[in-house]
Length: 115
Image 1 (tube, rainbow, N blue to C red):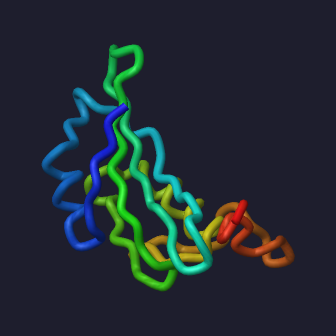
Image 2: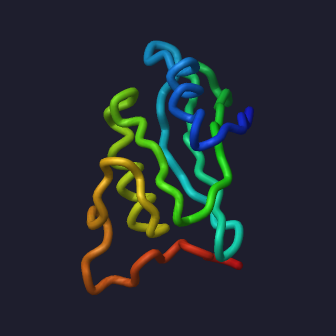
């Protein structure tokens, strides 16, 4: 596994340069709570026809920052983006809340999780 650090300002360009749909499978977008103010956002890819080759693009950001969408680069990412919105209570360009959590559910269940 290879981890590649990026910034919110550069993540779209970094993924756009890296991503070749014939070579890489977009697995998911993920979040990891770091503390009450910050979390790590991850975009995870796996190489087709390779046993254990994966690349994780990531950035550390505050919960109140708007995360850029990669839906126009990888259309299927909208599902992962909406999950991160629900689970962490963050904003991602063009991604609405309410895909996984009902109004009466515990909101932002992974924000600050395990801290």
